[in-house]
Length: 105
Image (tube, rainbow, N blue to C red; front, side, top):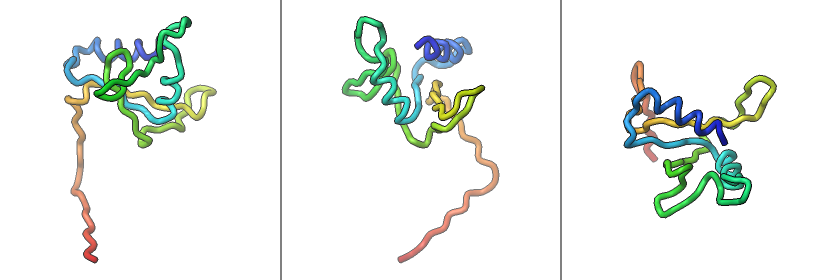
């Protein structure tokens, strides 16, 4: 899928560290990539598995149903997100406090 290669090129052109790159998506994308051949001659699926888990073109891939599968773009609906980035560089900003409710039984 050329869109996947375009996604990787978009991220990598910004000189991100190459040590923690990976894909994240949901179960719908996982099923699609496992059933989509890399080449017309059936040389294997885009998504492959080894002892370390799943990968796309040698890059780690993880899947969570917390990734949306109900996106829209143009006339397309029910679309899923495929996220690619340097996960070791991820920063999460938290404004305000965190409320914890502890229930003792």
